[in-house]
Length: 620
Image (cartoon, rainbow, N blue to C red; front, side, top):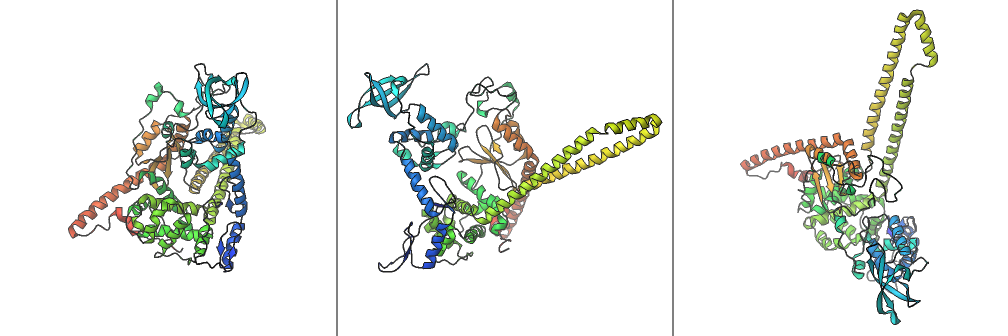
């Protein structure tokens, strides 16, 4: 079904108790039925807007009906792939880390030139061509392949087998599959990219493993530079420059590596499940970045982590977050807004009714992972929902919020501001360079000749005047350059403030990603398979990490450059967090001692701060 702003859009069920003789309004291409003409008109107008995306081909800016037609044509093209090619192509797709274009080109080339298991073609047998099927590829010691083939007789059955050479096999010159067909087939048969993962039912049907390759789990499965030996690339034509980094995994241990420090161990003491840390960070970072749009005042990552793990159903912090995201979706007037209108909901979310609107959202998404939790939320027991599911729900709300016009406009404004700041930096750098060149040129030839003439008349007196003027001019230029440098630094700081979203600092040799969020004094590390998270929280750990990176590798050199660039910012944030945590521990000890004397609960404990959250930006 077509996607609305790249999100699932469910069709409406027929009205209940519909009388066969009742006059209704029906949308021609969706078969949806409406009793009310205005509701029917609103839905048709939405379908006519160019906000729809073909789910199969990825084409956007379509009307709903155009997207339906595109999906139909794309599905037909995907089904044109020959039956005997499906399994080999799926094998090539599964866990590939190539881009879509690269993967299409690779598969197309293999289908055109290579023989592989399962391929049906013609082979020479007893001096004539007969239909056969490759059963096994036998790799010879001299890199020449032999092929065990099964000769196909009546009813498409294999009658006998034999081993033949490549020269005995005849491949059709006609392309077995076009690039556009492969493009669509890959999109339709996969549930994830980077790496590509095919649908579970397809993997089961064609006997394709669903276990990630060991090299991928170890971070070694992504594209590498092949055949880099003796300073050359795989084509043997371009030599690596001296000191130029290569793929980290191709580096061999050398005596120089003894100077590298050992990478410090990661802390993993999260309260949420370790595979849900990414959702936690994404939700928190979005709320911090777009708090003004959401009318949601800031809160700490620890407060959010403690809140989602708490069993109270109407915890103020979580209620405010859900309500703010739902209000944004309603205000945007998109799919969720239409869903509520069709249910005749009042479009006013309060701290009492928020769970009802959340149930409507979960119902609209129609995702299987939420089905078991829907009834729990509907009964008013949101706090009993599993922590991982709570974060999945929040992630789904954030995914929808990102597509709203308010957030897109904010992103566009930040992009414009970044471009303006970058232009100012370039202008200042250019002026600085011109001033430096002018200062280096010094006095022109004419001035020099005049100065020499003056020196000949009165070397002592006039020489002192000229020297004084030169010093004054040099000081003025130096002051200008200093001001320009300070201005450049200010612009750099301002550009960092205008960043659109948090992005990875880089990857280490094993493809682990490193993340830093300005308001959170930890350096987070995400494993290559996206499942495991950890963090560094001290300056000593940061220094040891930087000292462990091998700059001879492409990834670790780039990561070290980023860590060096933001070293002061990151180290200051780490030290501030350590200082704050020390003060919190002391305060907790004081509170605990006081509470033990008065036999009451330690309500002032800093670790319970999430219970005292107040949304100061609400309604502003």
